[in-house]
Image 1 (tube, rainbow, N blue to C red):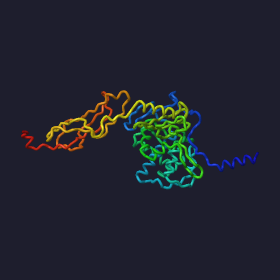
Image 2 (cartoon, rainbow, N blue to C red; image 1 turned 30 degrees about the horizontal axis):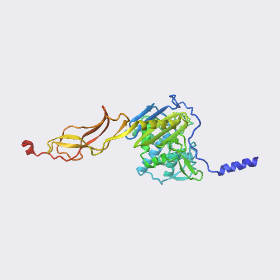
Image 3 (cartoon, helix red, strand yellow; image 1 turned 180 degrees about the vertical axis):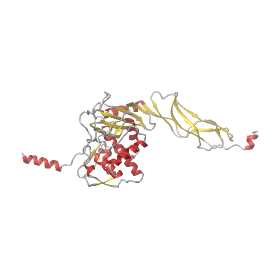
Image 4 (tube, rainbow, N blue to C red; image 1 turned 90 degrees about the vertical axis):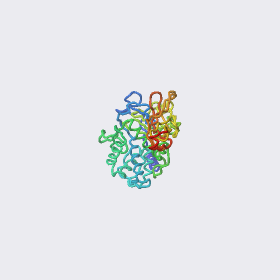
Length: 393
């Protein structure tokens, strides 16, 4: 019997470890979980191009983020690369602290060296706490310094209901009050910022991928919405980031795109992740409702004539006015038949240059203005000569 136990132990040591994900227990029980009786505590849906909210419930209530805080870690990392302070191939030496983070991880060994890009991949796909910690230490010298950067960036983005203590979102066993918090509104804005980077956008919709580090062969994305093998799979889903912890419950910042319209939905404090009333099911339902009930309309393309402007002291008395950009607006289906385009601008004084902004194009649905774009002069209008002004015959 003892020999059999020794054999099993040896087999376990020899076998590659499975990537530890943030899939939690059956039901979360934290104080911030399901405070509404809907199966979750707060939610928010926003259309990404217009920033128009389409659903809101406790959208400004700060709640524990769990791993969704890693979106800020990833955003700062990508901005460091954008600004030339970091490169994808910059080597990062894993500290003992980073190697012992626990939770969702890729088992980075202390002293091992990894390119920044590999750590980005591990953080975005696997939600790896050890990779997020390693990135933070590389960029700021310590996780504490990096948290200061996270809070500064949150202020710059106008995320007024967000506060960070660490780059990963793990609960703090020494001080439970030191826990990352954000509200659904702020998470939606942060999610949109993250999705501006093509690498992160690609990784956000990747269900699994190779990650060979001597321990792991593959890493797995815990987002059920982008995984065809999961019950809550949504064909239109594009990302973004999940989270689970005891205090936070099950959370997701999700996105989906259909017919040129993209939405971000945040669900926080859910009792479960999977299942018919979990974080994924609710996020998918909210996004689908938004995509079904709304559409992006373009009643006027860039360069379309939208009116005439009167010209004072010009060789021509009027000039055609054109839209300076596509007039795009988010409209509710069935309530979009009364859309009209109007030019708002007064008399202009010559000389007028082609392409000069001379007013505003208003997109109106009934009595509501739903979009504004620049109104441009379609042609040059020279100033009338002094002689003509005095003697107009």
